Picture 1 (cartoon, rainbow, N blue to C red):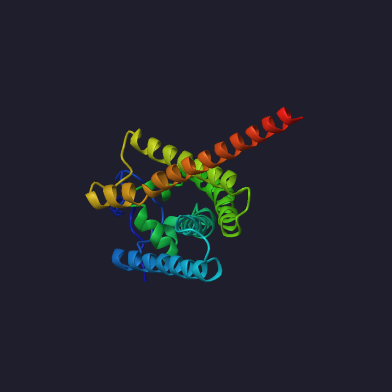
Picture 2 (tube, rainbow, N blue to C red):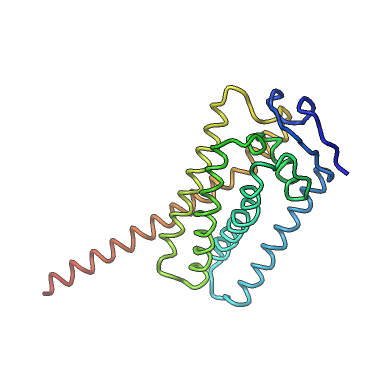
Length: 228
């Protein structure tokens, strides 16, 4: 069984952080990372096989976009929903998903410290961004006309959240990340960087599509007025 760790010996920064009732994970970091990586790989593989079977006419770009939004929706509506449900007791919760959060919290202890900003960001992500990602997935799948409106909105929400997330961490007086490079460069930077680069690219795509569509509609309207 897990042992309850005293406030002075938990592995998080700043070292002055108090985590009442903290329970250390039973699983090793390698086990936690291998398990979540395998689950994500299976999710994406099964989604891709479904796409090439049921929607063979989708372009490669649209297939990759669908995979991205399936990943986002799954993380937001399941993994991050768990965080909200256990927000006030995550440090003392011993189960596997809590252990995943505790491992990630080595790069950002705010997830265990019951920080209001993190709760607010996660609440918006779970209640708004997650469902929006699901809707965007469906619209890409069926070729819905509202696809780029929803895609742009989801991407802007992702970018907004990441800017606040990184900005408040970098401006903090004390770092919430352990000093080892793996936690800063891999956990904090590399794991969050896709939510900057991919949404930025998709936002540009959607903005271009919306602008082109509106320009074409405006020209068509002007043409009709001239003929009239």
